[in-house]
Length: 435
Figure 1 (spheres, rainbow, N blue to C red):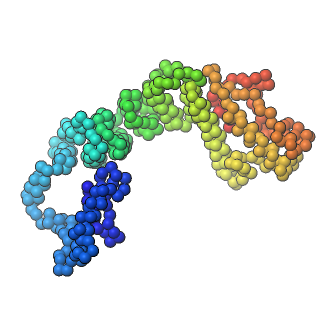
Figure 2 (cartoon, one colour):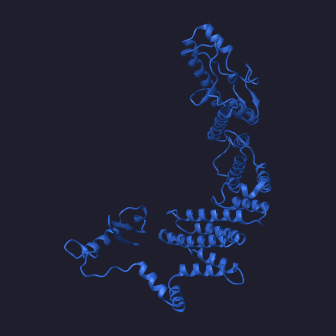
Figure 3 (cartoon, rainbow, N blue to C red):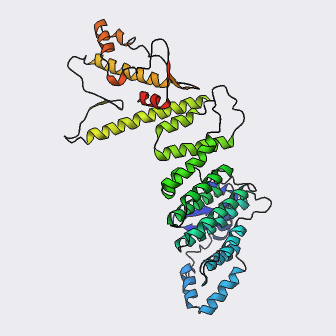
């Protein structure tokens, strides 16, 4: 039980039990409230309103007392307290190791990291919360080391702490999720240390990040190419791509119907790193090719279609930006359902007939996007869908023939769509066609 406090607006509570951790009134809080009412309930003297009672001692009084002590007495008071507070003693030892006259004592800091991440046989729910709380103090000490100008030393200590924390997760009940905050804090400090360390080698850093992601059983350094893009630079990203591509090319392609019962961890991590590299470069076509390597589930087809649709949205956003920045002033083309279209020409139908034509063209494009089929030799597009079946109901035959012969250029079937059957094309062409 952490205790309670009486405020002007009422009684506030906090408890570290599983129920109180969810901000729910638990039995410990009720017991504390009953004890309070038993002593200061109705008809009894309230602590704040007792007549003739002195003011309550606060932290301001403690500070005034400590300032009145001499240096020797203050040091003796702190040293006596260290025998009863292990976390404070460890924090002061790390601070002293960072401010020694002969330089930073890395061995002492490493021993402190080892002691802070030692778990024993197993930690239950309550013990894991205290364990994570002690690691928060360790994270603060590592941040202080970076601020002191020792970013190169902090990188090695943080990586050592992360490896120890991953091993500790296997021996604890972390259902509270406290360790996720520790991992996020350590990785944030690692990135900041790499940014401040001017002597680091981008290629060596890329090799460490790659090896870590392939060996870990958790999501440490996930999406490293995107997160560390500025730190790695062109040389580091090229080295990272070389390491990933070497393993990626050895993986077989998965086709519909292949066995997906067993989860391949290495394949999953390699694919996530390849996708992160593609997103770091902003290459949509490369993302489609990566997704095309695993089509053993319907979700793979859905991801490819989603990427094609995202490419269409990006193209239209870029078009709107260029039109707005036109040297002759902003151009405001007609816009319907989020897509650009040119103004109506004099010889084109107007009113409901025009809206029917444009609506059918949009539906035609959506059907083409959803009908994408993937085969081992590349993306295959189906024959063109016959437009005009629904359009003829409200439009005359001559107008329907005009519509089929004078459709917008952006909705004309590509040349590789033949009447005899579908033809193959590359993933890049498919994504461009869907635009």
